[in-house]
Amino acid sequence: MKHFGDIAFTDHVKAEQEVRGSREMYAGMTARPAPTGIGEREAAFISMRDSFYMATVSEDGWPYIQHRGGPRGFLKVLSDTQIGFADYRGNRQYVSVGNLQTEQRVSLFLMDYPNRARLKVLGRASVQDADVDKGLAEELAIEGQGTVERLFTIEVEAFDWNCPQFITPRFTEAELSASLTPMVEELQLLRQENAFLKQELGR
Image (cartoon, rainbow, N blue to C red; front, side, top):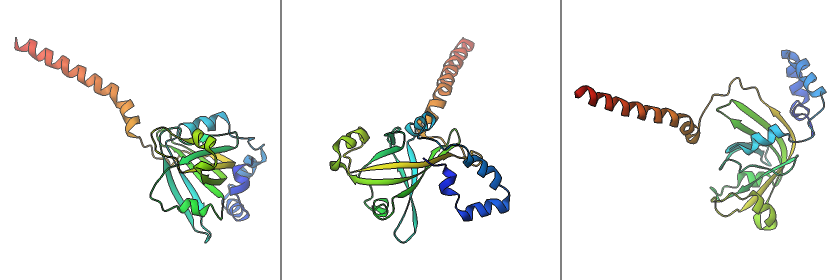
């Protein structure tokens, strides 16, 4: 596995860093030993995601970003260098599937909006029909999501944690419910107490 910068920092990128004063800092980061694989922190983060963004490139060189979503844990860590997910029937445009026929390189953004964290992943993706590898299909399938049509596997070549500075916190309905339920229950108790006190005052 490589440093994220070993792939992302091309000669033109390095030139811009040099001009703008950040080259020395990033050169120091990539001078350290690269990760040997997906670590415990990354695996835990991946397992908690209910969505991510995946970029592919067409044979004409156009990038395409697709949002993938599902229950928490639908993106699975298969080994210390591989992640994967099951693909179900969608809008049937097959843009990502088609792009991967000519270019396997992908870029993923995994977002944790409430905690303002972002994991960037670079890798090479493969896609195959689910009936080609029934064992993998069973491993990637998520109960209640329907029939698995395709299997995506991604060999991770590099990853990096991103600065949280400009990540705006956002919350799902489930996350809001977990935070607000105790407050709602407390308000209900206060209302009951208030109603009781009004009755007592009326007497």
